Image 1 (cartoon, rainbow, N blue to C red):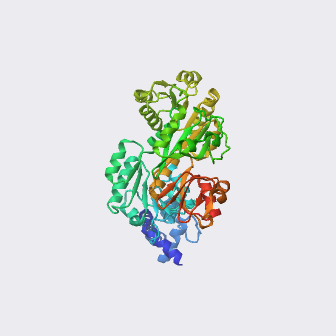
Image 2: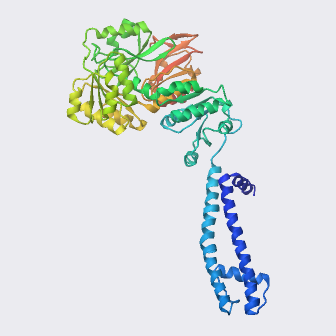
Image 3: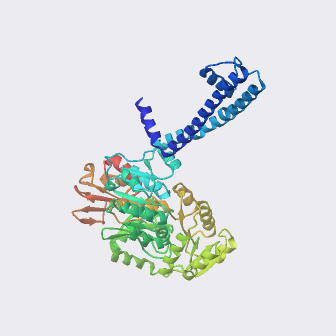
Length: 567
């Protein structure tokens, strides 16, 4: 009974349900008036024409049996006027009771009842005790990747959804969601915005601005992270009150541009005052040498913390043999990284232009950064307007389909050091990666993707480096939530910082078995504000220190399971 009572309270509060109930009530009132009129006319005709006397209950009884077409036949008219009246009552009953009433009941009561029930099934507020949670304004591709990471890290979050069908879908999928309008202060008040850790505004640029202004009216200090589609909107959202505005598409283009083979050592991240960089082996004398034979630590003071092989991050061993496809992940200070460039002095860098396929927001951002770094670029795009927009930053532009062999050949795919695939179609990028790999075996292929499930097939198609919009966006948001610098090492690869577990205290790296058991690469140890990166197998893990490791979420989870670590 309590459940029924609570449901009735919900229904009576629902505006749509109340409005439809009023319409149905008015129709029922009209039906009652018709019944009364027909009952009165029944008595008049029976007395004045038929000469019979019946009670008022009999009049209602006759009217209902005729209108409902039951027609028991125990009370009938003998006169033509009476029978004509019976026909009118019968036809009215067919229309009002058998046609209109069921439709009105279903349309204005039953369906609204189900819709109201669905509406009230979706939460409209978070529990009042909720604290330190992350609010996300859309379950887009970035949010889906972010949610996976938040679940792994056991961080509380809620999606705010203003579309009831989507909110119901998320609720049924057991995704924490609250239903409410995105431009309503009441929605954010019910979401405990003042006690939240952060809000992510990831709608379109215009709606993001409205969301930010709405929040700032009730929660002036809550950190707000906004995703900007257009660079022009970054300043607008900052002025509206966003603490961080992330132009993720531009960043994605720049990250991809930093992975081409036209440069030497390429810084890709930072930890404390140390830089993490990539060193392509293809243009050095390191090809065919082992890590031990290369002697980079002894010669330059840098540490080799991992190695990329065709999109796979692998731990480093002294006897690991380097190939022309190997890309070393190194760490050191700025001077040390600059000194490594002497490896390239004896080798001629491929002077041909880098080939960029796809000149949208991501592709254009890549072209602009390569142009800024004095790297020649040829661009292919099927849209002449995009080609015209990018032409000031390109060596040559080619309007047409990249699957055209003659066009690819003319654009320089056979001579280019690298090709950057930046179309927004994963299937097309996979096709082009395979095609370009067949045309030029030594080509470095860098590509964007949209769906994480396509990473493996992209690598099998021939891509050397792959990065997605979703990964970059979620990594940036997580870095902000933790107060870290954004370090993008590759698809799914991150820096993990954890206090030394008690089970590993005073053990050497080789004794700990971190790399062998989890696949993680230990790149640094921080103790008393000092960072040590020149690590050996005999380096001890002191109590009270922090271990900085490189790897993916699966490796990190395995570390926590085995050693009891924590982020």
